Image 1: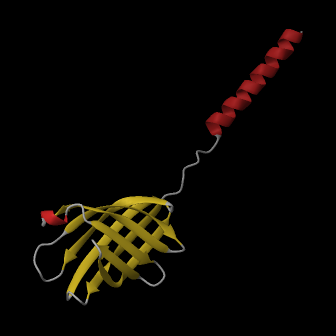
Image 2 (image 1 turned 90 degrees about the vertical axis):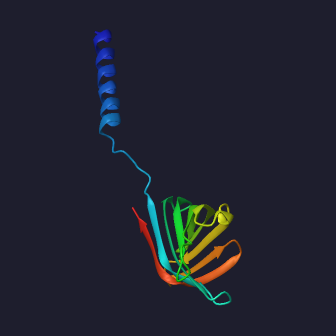
Length: 141
């Protein structure tokens, strides 16, 4: 009799564990997506750029890609691999140029700082600062 009782307890416990494992909802980390797009300029150089960046991940660990294109001076597009984070609605992404029409710019350090509340964008290209406004979207998923 004890054998049957012990076996019944094992079966109930096994079924409970199995139901918990199989039926428990899967927990996924929420993904945050960032999109920055706008025009920035450097008055000293009389140069305006169209900039764009997209990144996703957790707010503390974003990764993505960005680009810039000079307006009015011919081909000059750069592609930038980016990593960064979000703090109080401000997106900070940095990385290096990985592809460009000008090989001298490959490896140049680029930093995007963009405020989702005001739309302000600061674009630092190898120490040359460009500022402007645009769209700064943060979507928490």
